[in-house]
Each structure stands twice: as structure tokens, then as C-alpha cells.
Length: 323
Image 1 (cartoon, rainbow, N blue to C red):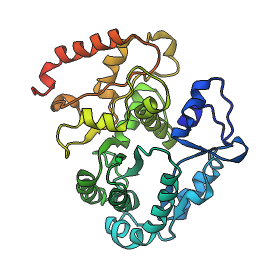
Image 2: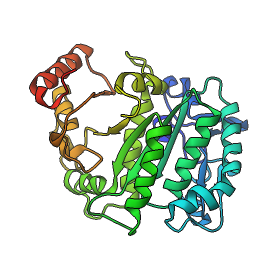
Image 3: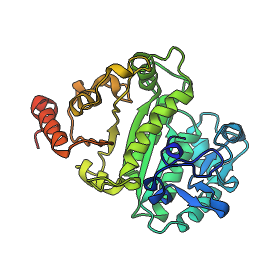
Image 4: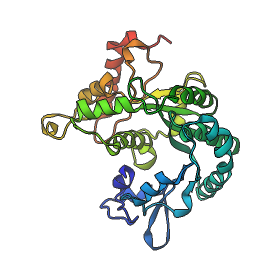
């Protein structure tokens, strides 16, 4: 939804934008079909049909290719082994076929982005199975995951810790970049910062998708630094197993107080490093930063950004590791 909006595409897949930049690299995320329709290069999979039906019934349901919905009938029942060994193993080949079709339609495949939760059975068990299978097939492509980890206070099921523990091992071995998100922190951002009284999953997803689109803006729009998933990995990861990132996002303001804020570089930087803006419920002051990457969008001077980054490093030097 966010990405369609950035590229000026409506829910039927037709383009209604006003800028050539939107179309210039639209094929990063979309394939052009007949009649000028743009179809997102996305594969949706689950072990039960219910979630797919809700996606299909939603506003952007007609956008996706019907062949790219892959689902089982039984569900994993919050059981990691069901998702990884029994139910998931039966479905995985058809998912890989769809992935292969999409990958063959690419000119230069950069990598895969995957969203899953580590609390349930499908996202954790089958998600990690898919990662290892894709890893076998495309060993030199970047595998980036956005993983919703079970949070300390908000819990849906009793077995979340087990599912997450089993998955993290797989993520350490097979993924290249893992963005850690958790629902509790996202709820907190909606409550405290955006002042929403009853946040829906739609609001949480909007926060996550804003962060996701931020990672790939450099691929889709012109900028001064031509970053991509691989360069992010190269610059961020000191040791191959340490690839778990926490995400902060700015500017986040409530609708009412929007006009009183000045979006300067110092303000954005300060908000971005604020513990309240982290999308996972962990206080950065209790640990150390190994590396930090800041991606800025919009019109701003590079000099100012560089000064701010130096400033952050000098001010918080105790929180950065001495290399």
C-alpha cells in the first residue's frame, strides 16, 4: 500500500502519478502486465486459507497475481515443527515454484525481502524453511527478513518463546539481514507518539511498511548515495552472524501537532535515536551500538547530515563500540 502510493499506483494496478521519477524505476517492485497494469512482484504464502481471503477482500486485493497466493488447508497450529517439517514441507515446493517464476522475470535479482512473525507456527517454522530453501537455490543473493519477535508483555500464544528460539538459530545461519520488530513497541509508538487510542493491525503494518520502503528507497528513487541491500549488509555487518538490526523511524508525530514541528536534520536525528521510536522493545542505552546506518529521504544538504552524524558519534561515544 505504501509502496503503491509512493509510485502513484491505485488499487487496480493502474498508474495515476505525476512524476517521471515514479515510473523510472517502478520495475524494482512491479512487473508491467498487458494494458499498462502494474503487478507487484510478491509471493504470499500461509498454511491456512483464511488470511489469504482477507488480503483478497481488502482494498489492494485485486493488485496481486492470483497465482502468487500459495496456501495450505490445515494451518500450523502455532507449532514450529508442523511449519518446518510436516505441513510446511508439503507446501514448500509450490512456493519455490512461484518464487522461481518471479525470479526469472527479473533482469538483475538483488535479493529477497520476507516478512514473517516468529511467534506462530507458519511464520517461524515454514518461514525459516523457505529461507533455507531459497538460500540453496540463490546462494549469492541477499536474504533480508522483517521478523516480528514475541514481545515481553504482549503475548498471543503460550509457545511463542519456543517458536522464536527455534527460528533464531535458522536466521543466524541462513539470513543476511534481519530487522527485528515487535508488536509491543509498535503499539507503544501508536499510543505515545501518534496518539492513536485504539491502534489496529493496519496502523502497525503502516509503521513497518514505512520502515521497509525506507530500506529500498535508494533502489527506487535517485539519490546521492546509491545504496542497496548488499551495500547495507557490507557496511553494517562486522561478523557474519551479527546481522540483527533494530529499526528506528522518524518523523513520527500525531496528526494534531504536525504543524508545530520543524523537520530539520538535527530534529530527525534526535528522534531517530530515541528509545521511544525503536520498533523493538529494547532500550539501546543498556547495550552498545556496533554500527548505525541512517537513511534520509527528501531535500537536505549532505554536509548537514554528515555534521549531525559526527555530532551523534561524539556525544554518545560511550554507546558506540571502540573498534
